[in-house]
Length: 191
Image (cartoon, rainbow, N blue to C red; front, side, top):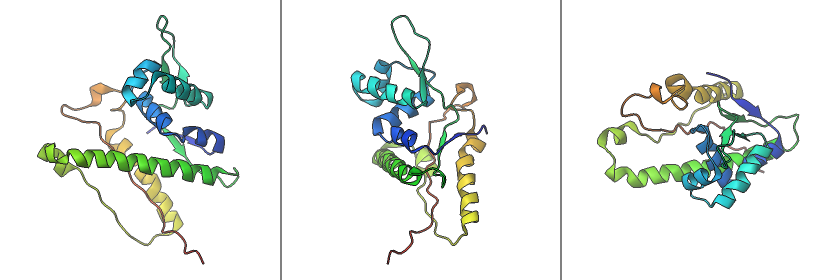
């Protein structure tokens, strides 16, 4: 699996911490390129709002302008392998910025899961049985937890790598699917 870009810069991380920007980046990562009008239709926002947020994503080097199509100005992702947002001890403010963005992503994923669960009564049985929500509690060292975190980042790529970018690699009947996992210790007790 190609390496993801690691980001620790708090200003750049905060540029992502907006639901519309996250939706736009997600959309542009799964399409070759799209105009603000096409993005607006895909994410359910106005063209003006999408245009503003696309410019912000470009300003912080997550996307770039693609070659013009006549008068149309398309955009494309420049993080094809995704991003790994990670705090760094040497970068002041990175922990707070990562926590804010991660909290927003947890809410986004929870809403996505809730939307799926709302459709579950009408889903085909094989898709219902293939889906799961699971949790585990265990004792681990920070080294073990770090290794598990890295493994979880690689699981989907090891199994399904390349299918997002290359539709010919998708078997018949495949649907876009998600893996969402949180790996963390319990919070320390506050005295």
